[in-house]
Amino acid sequence: GVPVNSRVSSKIQQLLNTLKRPKRPPLKEFFVDDFEELLEVQQPDPNQPKPEGNQVNVLKGEPLGVVTNWPPSLLAALQRWGTTQPKAPCLTALDTTGKAIYTLTYGT
Image: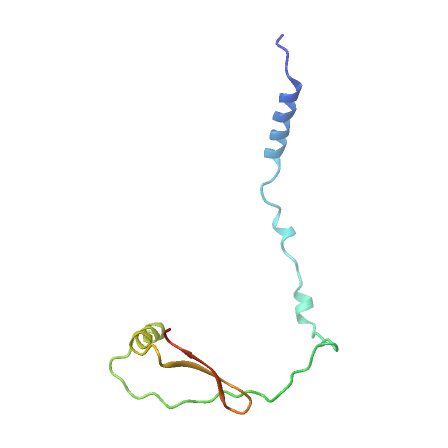
């Protein structure tokens, strides 16, 4: 017969063994049933830092007037306002005394 190179045969056998293995692990290996743990009330860590300072409250601005040509979405409204008024304040951060410390504008 024809001599067979055992080295090639072992590589072919290794390839066949690789192809026989499942491509993905079974779903049960990914699923963790922690529903009971979610129902348990977790106790806070005593070493966790405590909050400091006063509680922050949201301030309500002026009510919007009735406008007939409203943009179709909030994103469209921000786009329109940002292109027509790029230097207008968009967001202002206040310190604890109520003084403005950062102001973000719509444009550069």
